[in-house]
Length: 82
Image (cartoon, rainbow, N blue to C red; front, side, top):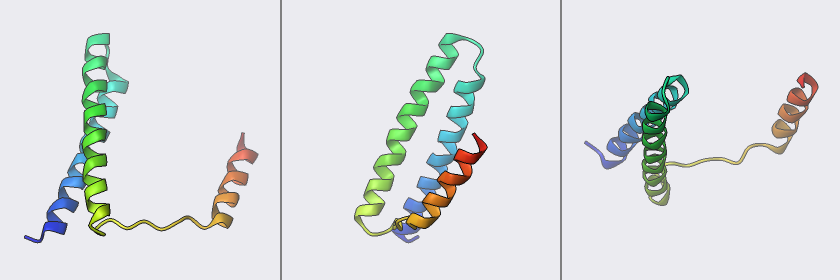
């Protein structure tokens, strides 16, 4: 299997784990459980960032700059809702 595909799959799985840890922290009933999920979430976010940074350095995860006009439109939309 190609390295880029493997890394992309791992990144997707880690992002999914972040989602699970976030929901666990938000829905936890006790401070101990909340703390455990919060710690796991932070560790998982750090792992995600390391994977992203490696993929980005290899040119495997490319991003584009957002169009300034679209940013301004979104800002105006949310300001009018507030």
